[in-house]
Length: 413
Image (cartoon, rainbow, N blue to C red; front, side, top):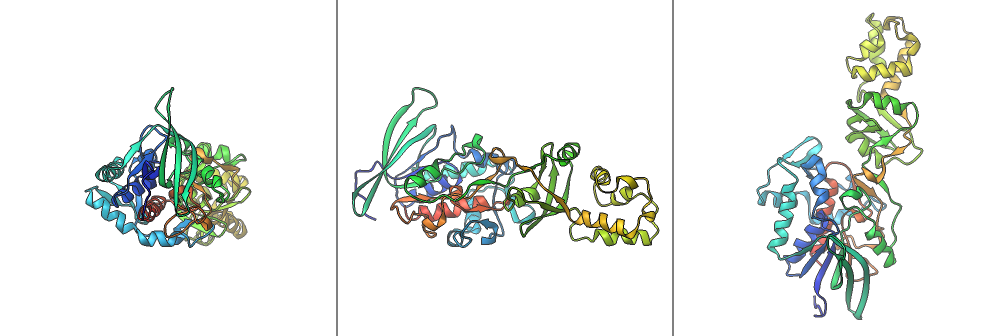
């Protein structure tokens, strides 16, 4: 690629998160002069907080079905170009100890700091320049000729006022600014603003991988059960996940809930199977045939945590609380069993971007090359990571999208 000499850098990357840092090192290994601008006080803040501080950096089983996008095929090219195995190989090269947990999730054994240190080392080895405490005030595009774009980025730099304001130029501008989720860790909407500035569509945005809240009878119930958890199957809009559900003082959370939140829309009901892959109605009816004389609550507590069973009793059979199971009618037992396998609830909402792990929606992938992450209508402008309309399930998939999209962009900027 022929580059005219007037730009300060070949590549400027906005955002020193997973995607930004990995794209920076990938590009710099090709001899590119790379500058990374980060508004926070340090790099990789979201990485450091992820996975309970252990960073679920990828997953053994990565497929397109693990991602949500208006174009479900968009992610395939990048994921196949740079796979989970490629990133695992890099982790092993840096002698980072990791472990596999359920559902193929890979976590650092020691700390998420290991991943940040690895990315920092990769950048240092290739002479990437990183500036923190940088706010981007303005981005402009100056076409020097028909074949060469030059982007000018005006920044305000420094931890406190007065801040230095300067303009820096580059040939390729990469937007790795993340999204709206967890603003305390650097989430912002600047990537969407830049996309709109260059006439790229942004799809509807909403919080994803986020706990549910309730405003009806479930709110005090969840408060009473706060801290209790159990494995459930949770269903909504044709999707289902079998993982742990956790009651909180605000509502319900845990992996199962976070997963299904990606498919829930305001006003939807969710269905919770408290005994997944188990016919609760037949179990109760068989207990009656076996002439079980204990209370239904006591019998159900064999399989469902007692504190929850007490709450279910007050909801579903309060008038029969003292009645032995043997004296329930078949219809009554069948009704309880059906509710155990399909507890229908209507969340009032989610906890929103404050606690959401991802932002659903983003820069419309129809406007982006799936092979390079370059905007189709704007030479030299790239979007990678969470700012795009690609969101992964819980389990390391969002990090893998960061690595894969960053790599393919880093190969061409």
